Length: 107
Image (cartoon, rainbow, N blue to C red; front, top):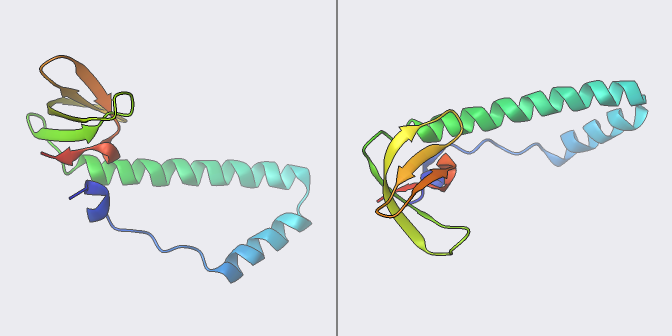
């Protein structure tokens, strides 16, 4: 089972709330929109980091994991050698990979 399936999903914004946001943006100046963009960017960064933190907590150094190689299209199995802030280092028999935590599964 994928780790992503085990994480808690955040409810989506209601359509009426999205319409309210759109109406507020429509009334905003360019400067207001720039400020709003920075707030959204910061919130996105925080959400992504929180999600990655929650996923990374489920892994530990020495654990056997697997993921599908984007480059080769096959399943790669290896052992975690290091957990970085944004990636997890996985060593296989032939090479070392830096993998995004959400792509990993316990093997």
